[in-house]
Length: 345
Image (tube, rainbow, N blue to C red):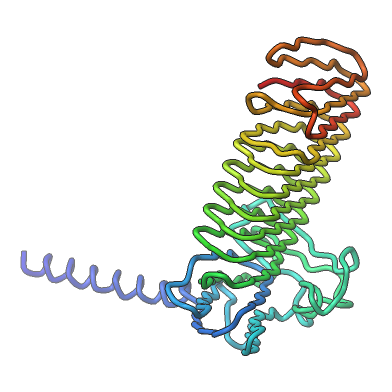
């Protein structure tokens, strides 16, 4: 009995030792933390997830977690620039390596960054990360390449101005009161409870915004749907090359939504005397107006019907129509190449 217990104990210790050995092999990477006192901050990263959170004080706080089986301090270079215009650039070894593995993409996913397709300036991802002349950087969920990425947490002080340039991965922002410009080549952007001017630009990836307040909110996606709700601003602009748009509980003086391909649904809680324009190459348009609207409305569809169901007004048309509701203070222009248009409140 004693020998059996001793054998079990030795087996358990051996198992723990092996587990520790395996963990030491798998758990590669390193972490870095920085603090900046600045009015404006610029961050550039090639692969990983970027989380923007509110800072507790007046300084920017950055936490970087470099991970992956090939993660090494010898391969990643972190460049810092302090002052009123602070900057942090996470440089991957793109001169020596063009293929990377980022498991968060999923086993069958692949994305390519081709610097020839983008404006090459010093104030861009290509410029900041040294992609000029490198042509193509390939990132896969699995397969050949360096398995390495950098997750970043950026804590933003109130009233600051921030620009984020990202290659592959998600950008998340929540609870921040600052002016934000968020650019990503491949990856979605999610923003919640944001206050300040907001620009979101994705080459490929959807955008979701909830509870955002600002003078100007601009969303541009090359490919990816857009969903916004509980939005208050002077000007809302959404432009998608391919992807539907769903905008609920919007209060804005001017709205412009343009999609190359995809349906549009816009629900206005409040509107002023500005211009509200929806244009889609292919897809239906559903417009919900607030009670007692005041606007001049024109609607045009290449293929589909136009219906209006408003207080005191019922109509159904083919192709195009124009009419006025209330005093006609605002201007509403609806245009779809193929799809029906429905207007109601």
